Image (cartoon, helix red, strand yellow):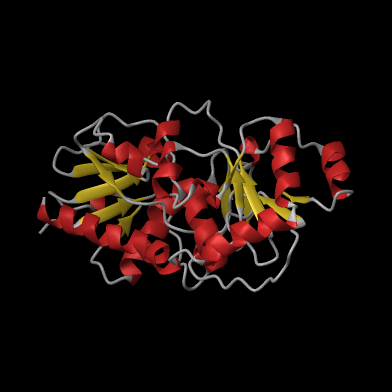
Length: 303
Protein backbone atom coordinates (compact mmCIF):
# COMPACT_ATOMS: atom_id res chain seq x y z
CA UNK A 1 0.00 0.00 0.00
CA UNK A 2 1.42 3.37 -1.03
CA UNK A 3 1.92 6.10 1.55
CA UNK A 4 0.23 9.42 0.89
CA UNK A 5 2.01 12.71 1.56
CA UNK A 6 0.94 16.33 1.13
CA UNK A 7 3.60 18.97 0.49
CA UNK A 8 3.44 22.57 1.69
CA UNK A 9 6.25 25.00 2.45
CA UNK A 10 4.55 25.96 5.74
CA UNK A 11 2.93 23.53 8.20
CA UNK A 12 -0.10 24.82 10.10
CA UNK A 13 -2.05 23.64 13.12
CA UNK A 14 -5.16 21.47 13.18
CA UNK A 15 -8.26 23.50 12.28
CA UNK A 16 -10.03 21.92 15.28
CA UNK A 17 -7.54 23.69 17.55
CA UNK A 18 -7.62 27.02 15.70
CA UNK A 19 -10.39 27.38 13.10
CA UNK A 20 -9.78 31.12 12.69
CA UNK A 21 -6.46 30.45 10.98
CA UNK A 22 -8.19 28.74 8.06
CA UNK A 23 -10.65 31.59 7.57
CA UNK A 24 -8.60 34.10 5.61
CA UNK A 25 -9.34 35.06 2.06
CA UNK A 26 -7.04 37.82 0.97
CA UNK A 27 -4.68 38.66 -1.88
CA UNK A 28 -3.01 41.42 0.09
CA UNK A 29 -0.16 41.04 2.51
CA UNK A 30 -1.11 39.48 5.83
CA UNK A 31 1.23 39.88 8.78
CA UNK A 32 0.31 37.23 11.32
CA UNK A 33 2.13 37.79 14.57
CA UNK A 34 0.63 34.71 16.21
CA UNK A 35 2.31 32.36 13.75
CA UNK A 36 5.07 34.76 12.68
CA UNK A 37 4.15 34.30 9.03
CA UNK A 38 4.21 36.90 6.31
CA UNK A 39 1.90 35.87 3.48
CA UNK A 40 2.06 37.99 0.36
CA UNK A 41 1.07 37.86 -3.27
CA UNK A 42 -1.35 34.94 -3.35
CA UNK A 43 -4.73 33.85 -2.06
CA UNK A 44 -4.14 32.47 1.40
CA UNK A 45 -7.26 30.37 1.14
CA UNK A 46 -6.17 28.50 -1.99
CA UNK A 47 -2.61 27.64 -1.09
CA UNK A 48 -3.43 26.26 2.34
CA UNK A 49 -6.94 24.92 1.82
CA UNK A 50 -5.55 22.39 -0.67
CA UNK A 51 -2.64 21.33 1.55
CA UNK A 52 -2.81 21.91 5.30
CA UNK A 53 -6.60 22.06 5.56
CA UNK A 54 -6.97 19.02 3.30
CA UNK A 55 -4.43 17.14 5.41
CA UNK A 56 -6.25 17.80 8.67
CA UNK A 57 -9.66 17.00 7.16
CA UNK A 58 -8.30 13.59 6.12
CA UNK A 59 -6.32 13.05 9.32
CA UNK A 60 -9.25 13.88 11.59
CA UNK A 61 -11.35 11.42 9.63
CA UNK A 62 -8.91 8.65 10.49
CA UNK A 63 -7.00 8.30 7.23
CA UNK A 64 -3.30 7.45 7.30
CA UNK A 65 -1.77 10.49 5.66
CA UNK A 66 1.31 12.67 6.16
CA UNK A 67 2.28 16.29 5.54
CA UNK A 68 5.79 17.60 4.98
CA UNK A 69 7.72 20.70 3.97
CA UNK A 70 10.77 18.66 2.96
CA UNK A 71 10.52 16.38 -0.08
CA UNK A 72 13.58 14.46 1.11
CA UNK A 73 11.45 12.91 3.87
CA UNK A 74 9.01 11.36 1.38
CA UNK A 75 9.68 7.60 0.98
CA UNK A 76 10.15 6.04 -2.46
CA UNK A 77 6.95 4.96 -4.29
CA UNK A 78 4.84 7.38 -2.24
CA UNK A 79 2.12 9.66 -3.57
CA UNK A 80 2.76 13.39 -3.11
CA UNK A 81 -0.05 15.95 -3.36
CA UNK A 82 0.90 19.58 -3.92
CA UNK A 83 -0.61 22.94 -4.89
CA UNK A 84 0.56 25.12 -7.78
CA UNK A 85 1.79 27.89 -5.47
CA UNK A 86 4.20 25.44 -3.84
CA UNK A 87 5.63 23.76 -6.93
CA UNK A 88 8.63 26.12 -7.20
CA UNK A 89 9.95 24.62 -3.96
CA UNK A 90 9.69 21.03 -5.20
CA UNK A 91 12.60 19.11 -6.65
CA UNK A 92 11.46 16.44 -9.06
CA UNK A 93 12.04 12.80 -8.08
CA UNK A 94 11.33 9.94 -10.45
CA UNK A 95 10.54 7.50 -7.63
CA UNK A 96 7.34 9.17 -6.39
CA UNK A 97 3.93 9.94 -7.92
CA UNK A 98 3.11 13.66 -8.11
CA UNK A 99 -0.52 14.80 -7.79
CA UNK A 100 -1.36 18.45 -8.34
CA UNK A 101 -4.44 19.70 -6.51
CA UNK A 102 -5.59 21.79 -9.42
CA UNK A 103 -8.08 24.34 -8.08
CA UNK A 104 -8.11 26.94 -10.90
CA UNK A 105 -4.34 27.18 -11.32
CA UNK A 106 -2.23 26.26 -14.39
CA UNK A 107 -1.20 22.65 -14.82
CA UNK A 108 2.34 21.69 -13.79
CA UNK A 109 3.91 19.44 -16.48
CA UNK A 110 5.67 17.00 -14.17
CA UNK A 111 2.46 16.05 -12.31
CA UNK A 112 1.32 12.47 -12.91
CA UNK A 113 -2.27 13.17 -11.83
CA UNK A 114 -4.46 16.23 -11.32
CA UNK A 115 -7.24 16.66 -8.77
CA UNK A 116 -10.00 18.99 -9.92
CA UNK A 117 -12.73 20.48 -7.72
CA UNK A 118 -14.99 20.78 -10.76
CA UNK A 119 -17.38 17.90 -11.39
CA UNK A 120 -18.00 19.20 -14.91
CA UNK A 121 -14.28 19.38 -15.75
CA UNK A 122 -13.78 15.87 -14.39
CA UNK A 123 -16.66 14.42 -16.41
CA UNK A 124 -15.50 16.16 -19.59
CA UNK A 125 -12.69 13.55 -19.87
CA UNK A 126 -10.34 16.11 -21.41
CA UNK A 127 -7.48 14.36 -19.64
CA UNK A 128 -7.16 10.72 -18.61
CA UNK A 129 -5.28 11.46 -15.41
CA UNK A 130 -7.80 13.83 -13.77
CA UNK A 131 -9.35 12.86 -10.44
CA UNK A 132 -12.21 14.54 -8.58
CA UNK A 133 -12.52 16.00 -5.09
CA UNK A 134 -15.01 18.76 -4.19
CA UNK A 135 -13.72 21.99 -2.70
CA UNK A 136 -13.85 21.57 1.11
CA UNK A 137 -16.27 23.91 2.83
CA UNK A 138 -14.85 26.71 4.99
CA UNK A 139 -14.26 25.38 8.51
CA UNK A 140 -16.62 27.95 10.01
CA UNK A 141 -19.45 26.80 7.74
CA UNK A 142 -18.99 23.02 8.19
CA UNK A 143 -21.81 23.37 10.69
CA UNK A 144 -24.19 26.31 10.50
CA UNK A 145 -27.56 26.96 12.11
CA UNK A 146 -29.68 29.58 10.31
CA UNK A 147 -31.41 31.59 13.02
CA UNK A 148 -32.47 34.84 11.38
CA UNK A 149 -36.17 35.06 10.69
CA UNK A 150 -36.32 38.10 8.44
CA UNK A 151 -38.70 38.99 5.63
CA UNK A 152 -36.66 41.57 3.73
CA UNK A 153 -32.86 41.34 3.40
CA UNK A 154 -30.54 44.25 4.12
CA UNK A 155 -27.03 42.78 4.60
CA UNK A 156 -25.39 41.75 1.29
CA UNK A 157 -21.96 40.14 1.68
CA UNK A 158 -19.44 39.87 -1.13
CA UNK A 159 -17.74 36.49 -0.63
CA UNK A 160 -14.51 36.52 -2.59
CA UNK A 161 -11.05 38.00 -2.90
CA UNK A 162 -10.43 41.69 -3.50
CA UNK A 163 -9.42 41.15 -7.14
CA UNK A 164 -12.92 39.88 -7.98
CA UNK A 165 -14.89 42.64 -6.27
CA UNK A 166 -16.85 44.65 -8.88
CA UNK A 167 -15.06 47.97 -9.35
CA UNK A 168 -18.31 49.72 -10.18
CA UNK A 169 -19.51 49.14 -6.60
CA UNK A 170 -17.46 52.11 -5.44
CA UNK A 171 -18.01 54.19 -2.32
CA UNK A 172 -20.60 56.49 -3.90
CA UNK A 173 -22.62 53.59 -5.31
CA UNK A 174 -22.56 51.73 -2.00
CA UNK A 175 -23.68 54.86 -0.16
CA UNK A 176 -26.53 55.25 -2.63
CA UNK A 177 -27.55 51.61 -2.11
CA UNK A 178 -27.62 52.18 1.65
CA UNK A 179 -30.50 54.58 1.13
CA UNK A 180 -32.47 51.57 -0.17
CA UNK A 181 -31.37 49.53 2.87
CA UNK A 182 -28.87 47.54 0.81
CA UNK A 183 -25.71 47.32 2.92
CA UNK A 184 -22.72 45.98 0.97
CA UNK A 185 -20.34 44.02 3.22
CA UNK A 186 -16.86 43.48 1.78
CA UNK A 187 -14.57 41.99 4.38
CA UNK A 188 -11.84 40.42 2.24
CA UNK A 189 -10.22 38.77 5.26
CA UNK A 190 -13.02 36.20 5.61
CA UNK A 191 -13.86 33.19 3.46
CA UNK A 192 -17.05 32.21 5.29
CA UNK A 193 -20.60 33.40 5.86
CA UNK A 194 -21.90 34.77 9.14
CA UNK A 195 -25.36 34.44 10.65
CA UNK A 196 -25.93 38.19 10.23
CA UNK A 197 -25.64 37.88 6.42
CA UNK A 198 -28.97 37.97 4.57
CA UNK A 199 -27.67 37.51 1.00
CA UNK A 200 -24.23 36.90 -0.45
CA UNK A 201 -22.90 37.52 -3.94
CA UNK A 202 -19.88 36.80 -6.10
CA UNK A 203 -19.06 37.39 -9.76
CA UNK A 204 -16.45 35.18 -11.41
CA UNK A 205 -13.46 36.62 -13.22
CA UNK A 206 -13.80 34.99 -16.61
CA UNK A 207 -10.36 36.24 -17.67
CA UNK A 208 -8.90 33.29 -15.77
CA UNK A 209 -7.80 30.70 -18.40
CA UNK A 210 -8.67 27.93 -15.92
CA UNK A 211 -12.24 29.14 -15.40
CA UNK A 212 -13.55 25.77 -16.58
CA UNK A 213 -12.04 24.26 -13.41
CA UNK A 214 -14.05 26.47 -11.08
CA UNK A 215 -15.82 24.67 -8.26
CA UNK A 216 -19.34 25.05 -6.85
CA UNK A 217 -18.51 25.89 -3.26
CA UNK A 218 -20.80 28.91 -3.09
CA UNK A 219 -23.78 26.87 -4.23
CA UNK A 220 -23.01 24.40 -1.43
CA UNK A 221 -22.72 27.28 1.05
CA UNK A 222 -26.10 28.64 0.01
CA UNK A 223 -27.73 25.23 0.47
CA UNK A 224 -26.16 24.63 3.90
CA UNK A 225 -26.59 28.10 5.38
CA UNK A 226 -29.95 28.87 3.71
CA UNK A 227 -28.53 32.26 2.70
CA UNK A 228 -29.58 33.23 -0.85
CA UNK A 229 -26.80 33.60 -3.42
CA UNK A 230 -26.50 36.11 -6.26
CA UNK A 231 -23.78 35.33 -8.76
CA UNK A 232 -22.48 34.35 -12.15
CA UNK A 233 -23.18 30.65 -12.59
CA UNK A 234 -20.65 28.26 -14.11
CA UNK A 235 -21.37 24.96 -15.84
CA UNK A 236 -20.25 23.21 -12.68
CA UNK A 237 -22.71 25.20 -10.58
CA UNK A 238 -25.53 24.14 -12.90
CA UNK A 239 -24.68 20.46 -12.35
CA UNK A 240 -25.65 20.83 -8.68
CA UNK A 241 -28.59 23.18 -8.89
CA UNK A 242 -31.85 21.50 -7.94
CA UNK A 243 -33.71 24.34 -9.59
CA UNK A 244 -32.20 27.22 -11.57
CA UNK A 245 -34.25 29.51 -9.36
CA UNK A 246 -32.32 28.38 -6.29
CA UNK A 247 -30.02 31.31 -7.04
CA UNK A 248 -30.29 34.65 -8.80
CA UNK A 249 -28.10 34.80 -11.87
CA UNK A 250 -26.22 38.05 -12.44
CA UNK A 251 -23.85 38.76 -15.36
CA UNK A 252 -20.91 41.09 -14.83
CA UNK A 253 -22.63 44.43 -15.27
CA UNK A 254 -23.47 47.16 -12.80
CA UNK A 255 -27.11 47.65 -13.76
CA UNK A 256 -27.94 43.96 -13.76
CA UNK A 257 -26.28 43.29 -10.40
CA UNK A 258 -28.06 46.21 -8.76
CA UNK A 259 -31.31 45.03 -10.34
CA UNK A 260 -30.71 41.66 -8.67
CA UNK A 261 -30.23 43.38 -5.32
CA UNK A 262 -33.49 45.25 -5.81
CA UNK A 263 -35.35 42.14 -6.93
CA UNK A 264 -34.40 40.06 -3.89
CA UNK A 265 -35.46 42.96 -1.68
CA UNK A 266 -39.03 42.10 -2.66
CA UNK A 267 -40.47 40.06 0.16
CA UNK A 268 -42.16 37.54 -2.16
CA UNK A 269 -38.90 36.77 -4.02
CA UNK A 270 -36.78 36.51 -0.86
CA UNK A 271 -39.35 34.32 0.89
CA UNK A 272 -39.65 31.95 -2.08
CA UNK A 273 -35.88 31.41 -2.31
CA UNK A 274 -35.58 30.93 1.46
CA UNK A 275 -38.32 28.33 1.38
CA UNK A 276 -36.55 26.40 -1.38
CA UNK A 277 -33.25 26.50 0.49
CA UNK A 278 -34.91 25.23 3.67
CA UNK A 279 -35.96 22.05 1.82
CA UNK A 280 -32.50 21.17 0.50
CA UNK A 281 -30.88 18.03 1.91
CA UNK A 282 -28.09 19.78 3.84
CA UNK A 283 -26.62 16.54 5.13
CA UNK A 284 -25.80 15.48 1.57
CA UNK A 285 -23.72 18.62 0.92
CA UNK A 286 -22.05 18.49 4.33
CA UNK A 287 -21.01 14.85 3.77
CA UNK A 288 -20.32 15.03 0.02
CA UNK A 289 -16.70 16.15 0.39
CA UNK A 290 -15.86 13.43 2.89
CA UNK A 291 -17.44 10.66 0.82
CA UNK A 292 -15.41 11.72 -2.23
CA UNK A 293 -12.29 12.08 -0.07
CA UNK A 294 -12.68 8.47 1.12
CA UNK A 295 -12.95 7.29 -2.50
CA UNK A 296 -9.88 9.29 -3.55
CA UNK A 297 -7.66 7.99 -0.77
CA UNK A 298 -8.80 4.43 -1.45
CA UNK A 299 -7.88 4.92 -5.12
CA UNK A 300 -4.41 6.21 -4.22
CA UNK A 301 -3.76 3.30 -1.87
CA UNK A 302 -4.48 0.83 -4.66
CA UNK A 303 -2.17 2.46 -7.24
